[in-house]
Length: 382
Image (tube, rainbow, N blue to C red; front, side):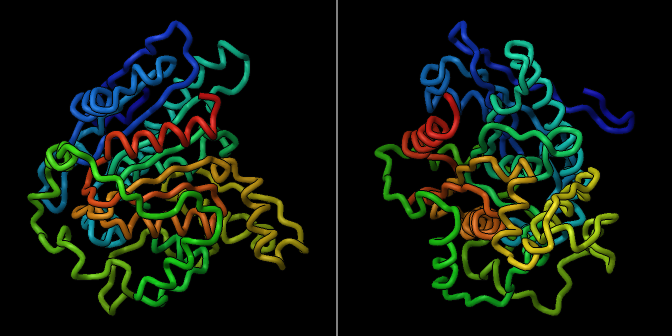
């Protein structure tokens, strides 16, 4: 994959070929911040017995290149992008831009490369045979890449997506574009009402207590640098609501906020707020804007316009599974809920959400992995 001459290349991904002679799908799964493909990928495969359970699947685990961490006094660590706070990832979003853009470019090329294998077999687009997923920051980077779209004009999409213990970068800004009310009640009741509407499936906290304590042991091995951050408040518990209304303190410079339309060059009457949100993501990823044709009649009815945008933006048609530990001390489960709410209720995506009781910052075997496999079997020809 081509890399800018002044940028270090991404390490070669860990690739596990299918055990069966038939190759039906490829899973590309991203590790969390501070980890790598060998450490994360081997553990996931072994603990969940994935290769044996999915013998026709090729597993690809990329490794994030080293980037200097702002909260760790510029120490280089494996991270998909730099971020200032996990309590409120909307702080200092300017730090995230370069990494998100470079990681998305890397992932698009990796997906394209893997898709060509299936195109050679069938003569059709192979992107639908790709499943994209990630843990923690890997989930955040992967979902942002997914929303930015694949192909030259966003005309391709992967078959499915799954994320564990993640969040959505630029969630607050995207919410502003989509017209979300930032002053909603903090009691949780209105949030739960939102979660019970829209295209969310399988919502709830799953009472799935594991007999062993491997989850807690492994959570210590992932995202190591999160435990040594300079700003301890960024990783504290739930004393401060990360979704509280913004105060007078500036969140940080937003390099993409301006008085000009979000979709430059596209007449405002022919685009929806969903298209604007997607084009904001594409702008961050240094991609050209896309347009969906919305009739004047549809533009006056928000629900119709939303579905028109979904039909015209292929990434929005991707089925998504999001799982999160209800007791996650690093990435609050509320961040996962907010991502689910925005994607399902406001971008009209098909999202399956589950929170796992008594689980911290990791995935649960077998419960969560079983749920992911079941979800994939229901949504793709796995």
